[in-house]
Length: 387
Image 1 (cartoon, rainbow, N blue to C red):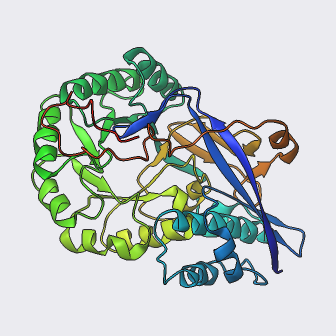
Image 2 (image 1 turned 120 degrees about the horizontal axis):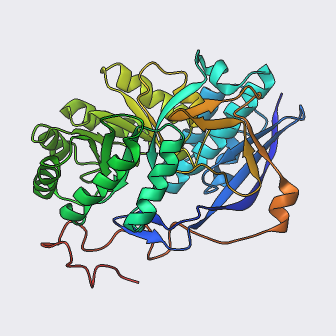
């Protein structure tokens, strides 16, 4: 079996609610979803979602190759762009191709990906995460009540601007999830919006009212020394790593003892997740994949590693024109038996409807404020954002 070409489709996800974090939000709740179809001479097509950046530069590393050599092809893609660096969106393109390669490998074997990778149990534990910074209190309660209906006992709030507001809203999340457990696990995600002392003071204030399971991305992603000092200063675990683009970028965090919950962004692909998970396991640390809505196939990989803690479940739906063989139930993801990662594409449906959206508009969560970490009070924000 040889790789012969690829095609890119573009569809959208309608989240049905505003989504975002402390950096900004998408009021429409509509985002673009690239879909990559990796074709072979055997008639099998691998499906990848996430990013379509730099695919033309990366594809020569795959063309004419047997897609079942996933690990070697992943390294060939890294080598293809080593002079420019594989960070950022280019690493997302590698992850999308990587997802399609794993899909082909499992389809060729006639097995669901979770079993091919070595999973014994099709159930993947998860936690609810609403990307909920722009939801009012009523909508926040509605979202987490719906997730409680699916058995979730853990929830992650987007916050970081006003401790009093976050304390109140964490209470709303806890109340919604308490029907399934007397002590819901609560997490707070600050999305790299603090400096060290801000983080210590903020988390300490929250911990007077809530027993935080973890604080996520409190500092800039590369600040290993700061994360190490922070985790020694608070009760909550420190979770970070989702925006690191390559296993080597975790080295300083590991060496400094700076991370308690190792995270991997799902958009970066399956091979990246597996390598980070194994590196974390060697240090007796749990792994938690972030953003399964960008690459649901990583749930299959999570089923096959020994140190998986919980996967972020942000939505119960799928992008328009895509379907997946899985169920959200019992507080996690129940994977199906379809060969591959279980995603199918309705190209005819996608061709009939096009709705545009983007994470990267100036008011969105992927555009960092020039005043992030430089505010003295919570409401000091009128000139935060350059447009």
